[in-house]
Image (cartoon, rainbow, N blue to C red; front, side, top):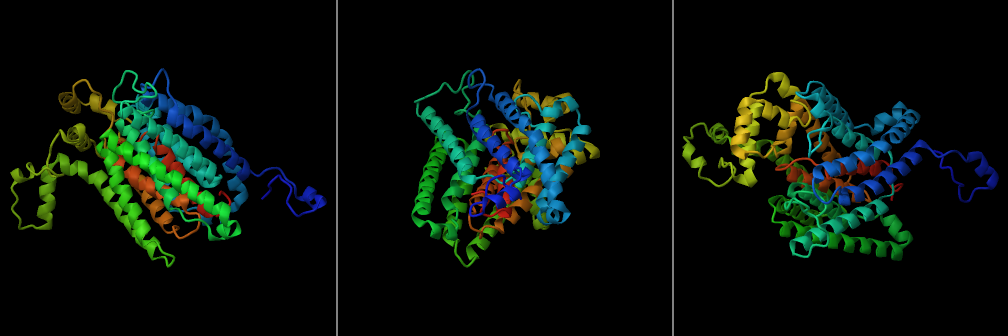
Length: 491
């Protein structure tokens, strides 16, 4: 692979013979690093006309930053793939990559068959999670997969921006506003948006902090320069501990249930990893089981919690399937203040949202169930249906309902069963593959991607994707795969 730089310890004549233009991989890595250095601060701090209408502002910023990098990164990717050859590609191509491509394919089918193709192109106003937005997420996953970058500068920028955002949120809640965040909307938190958007960003910050705190250094590099390496490692861990403290204080001070979900998921996972990590490999195996169980529970919760909450008879049928002889009184299930309680007021109206969403799902024909009503077409379809329109306006009045506030349920309705299955396989296969690599040195990115899947997945079980958090999840997964394919080259 050409580096375009003189090789140390080699004569000038030999260097002249071997000097080549920078390779596509090197150029792609530089471009991708530049993209991250621009994207992270922009998503963290960008505003337009004050910190209000941030859903549209953050999307405009994401699109403005991402689109200029698409063509050069795509050209570098094509050149690199052609040079790599089929044999090398087949070794690196995995189930996660196949699931990502499958998800992109079924997402495209959903767009072509969408209820409103114009709306599904970029998505509905305020959210913008349409067809092209989702394809951008997938494209930058593959770019992160193909082009390794130096991790430490990116991690430094990410932690610095996250720390500033969380600190601003905490001071604002304490009555010491440094910036006029809210504009005309009191519900906005810091520089990110409403509390659901903020909790998604908080989940990513928590994942990065946990990974930096628990990562394993390369023993060989520590032996080569122990004083410097240990000092840098300790500095990074102290910074991560401070960031994690800000995460905790911010989650508690916001008073949001999603913030407490983040703490409830991440802290036990950290404790489990710290307590059972060992050089024998038992720790990573145990941790792999913990993560697999957590993700299984999260995905089941994403799909089943809205159903059981909105339909008590489903809970009764479940218990009767377990014990056919049981005679259950329906009235008992409406008085239990748990998931069996069909309350429209649960979770700031999520009970009603889930009930209406399942009503919408029931009225869809088979083709719509397979391919969905179209990416981010929830609102246009719901208000075009007389029955669903009546339910929404009765429950929420003039407020506009744009998604199911439960990620898997939203994917099922908007993009269909086939896309939902592909997306689930993508996430779960990535988790399994990365858990198997926890024993490798320099596992910071692996931990960051795993923690992000757990924390952000838990939040999205009761919220939705956002352009301020979801693209970074895809990028983290791709970077973790890239690090494991180029051990030591991107540190």
